[in-house]
Each structure stands twice: as structure tokens, then as C-alpha cells.
Image (cartoon, rainbow, N blue to C red; front, side, top):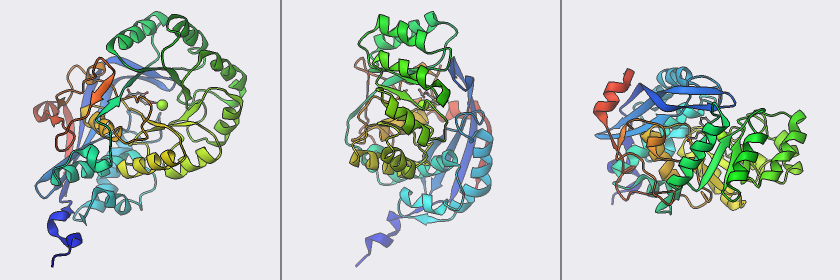
Length: 379
Ligand code: OSB
Ligand code: MG
């Protein structure tokens, strides 16, 4: 009798890892309280596993602003520590890979890129849609948009108008001191009933609590990450004072942070970004905890190309992704995306989920080659 656990076909040997950096200009700049991005440096990871290839995107930014990770730390940490920890290993499932990388402290975005490439490979090896392998249950996901700080209020209003016309179910605007009250007032005056939220990316401090109270007037779905990127305690103080729900993004690095934030009532909603929490396994763990505690989650975005975006679509099919995410159409960011078909949003503000094996999106390998500025095969 064959033991299915040890059956070779049920194993994946990690033979080699390729890392690539691409340079991709954004169609329009994206500005948050921590700065403006006009062009992305994107790291893609390919896991080569006995004839099967898995792809993923590292969502680290161009500088250490959203978190301490950035392109250069991701590249070197993958090259010198994480890929070597995986090479030659035989794993049964992608979810076995975090344990192999656990001696490296932190660097969740670098780890996530590798783990997610292995999930992608596993889905292809098992001939399953990735969303099914992740435990997803939806056949379409609800989409919102994140709109950055603009050069003028008029420019922002125009963008909101465009996105509402496209069917997006929720508008999120970036805020910071000096780009907040007036902006929210104008939006609410023009669109009193839309689902509206805001994201401060840590732009406020406890001396702003009185100011933040005024956000309660705008019937916001949530205010995302008002305080320090690494804080839970002060957010709990603020949540006690506010009627508006706080959503944590940067502060939630893993399931234990979510546990602490929920127990301290520091937020009522959690944004899950698979890169921020270190990969699909931890994203599922955060999701499951939130579901058990009746905390709705939604899928955040990091200005991904189609590779990361397709992974966000798959993750968003899990049942507790109950609020529209920041998973929007490729064409909002890119002249030409690196996957086909591009990620498209229906006039009802949804993305239908593919029944195909893997993500359901094919890589445009020629275009990827043309956009590549450096690549390295490890193993
Ligand atoms: O805080 O959600 C954020 C983009 C870069 C860094 C942080 C954030 C964002 C976004 C963009 O809001 C969401 C998207 O990819 O559309
Ligand atoms: Mg955010």
C-alpha cells in the first residue's frame, strides 16, 4: 500500500528560484501621507519545482516608507537567506514553507513572495484554481478603489466621479493633516450616500485626537491606520473616543497582532495584505481569527502588477472578506499589465473569479523580459 503522504507526486522539490526586478511607470502618480510614487520597481519571484513554475510578486516599495522593507532589502534577503533556506527542500504543500524561512526575523514581504510563488506552483501541480486551494468560497469579489492625494481638490473630485461611474462599490481617499476635513466635507456634500472611507497611513498623533473627532461627521465606513505604523495601544484609546470604526493596516503584521488589536478593541475592521503579513498562510490565519471574532476583513493593495493583483483576487474569495477591497482594475495603474487578460472590473464593481487552474491569468513573458532591469537565478 502506498502512503499518500510520502507519494512523490504529492511533493514539490524546490529546485531553483528566479528573482527579477521590473521598472514600470504608473499611469498617474500615487500619493499617500508618506510620499508620492510615480514609477514602480517590482520584484517578481519564480519558484521552479520539477517542471512546474509558480510566480509571485514582492510588494515591497521603492523606499522604507510604508514599512521598513523596500526593494533592496527584499532582493538581498531573498538572495542571501530566504531562497537558500528553500533550495533543495521537498515540501508537501506551500504552507510548509514558512517554517523553513522562520529563522529570518521579519522581512514579511520578502517571505510572502517566496511562499506565494509556492502556492502558485502547488495550484498548478494539483491542477486547481489557486482560490480553491486557499479555501475560497466566492465566485466574484467586491471592489473598491484607493485614491491618492492629488494636486487639487478638483482633481480628486474628478477622480472620484470617474471611479463611481466605473461601478466601484467603495471609495477610499488618502488623508493627512491639511488634506482631510475640507476634502471629506466636499465629497460628502456631493455624494452623501456613497460608501466612503479614508486612510491616513499613520499621519496623526494623540495631539490630533480632537481633530479626528470631527471625522465622525462624515459617516465613514472606517478610518484606516490613523496613528503610528507599529501601534495598537493608542489606537485602542482613539477607538474608545470615536464613533467611526478604525481599520488597522500597517499595525497588523501577523495573527498575534490581530489577536491583540481585537482584544484591546483597537479596531473594528482589519485590512489584510498578504505581503504585510508574510504570505498566504498567515493571511489565512488572520482571516480565520477575524472570522471567529466577528471582525470583517478586506483585501488591501500595494499598487501591484497583475501578478500580485491576481493573488489578491484569489485571497479575497475567502468568506470573511466581507467588505469591498482595494483590488481594482489593471488599467487604473498600468498602460499595459504583465498578465493577460488584464484584471477587469465589471460595471457592478466586481471581479469574477476564474475557474481555471492557477490564477486564471497568463504571464506576458515577452513584456516581462522587456521591462526587466535585473534578474538572478538562484539554485
Ligand atoms: O495603505 O493601503 C495602503 C498603496 C501603497 C502603500 C499603502 C497603501 C496603498 C494603497 C493602494 O492604498 C491600494 C491599491 O493598490 O490600489
Ligand atoms: Mg492602508
